[in-house]
Length: 131
Ligand SMILES: [Zn+2]
Image (cartoon, rainbow, N blue to C red; front, side, top):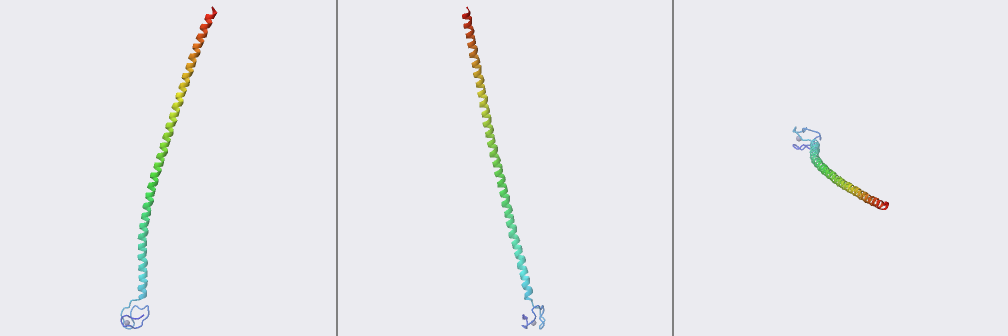
């Protein structure tokens, strides 16, 4: 490279010009420093982007989890409602069976009464004809 002070050709890795003695900046070192700076800045920017994205993902995941919980609770509520309906239908059926049993009992009593009446009439007839 050339010294920017005196313009003479000097070695590329020189820190001071061997002709005028002034400090010269090594472009290669500056270049490496620049690359390192860019890499570090990129890493910082990428970290920030990644952190924000991760935060957003976590938030979405949390929202999804809450939505799932609500759906689960609603599903359980629907199942419970269905069970309640089934229970009511079962109770209604049992009540009807009980009613039917009572009607059968009533019919039996009526039949018994009619038979009793018939026996009484037969006995009266027997008494009459026994004369
Ligand atoms: Zn010089």
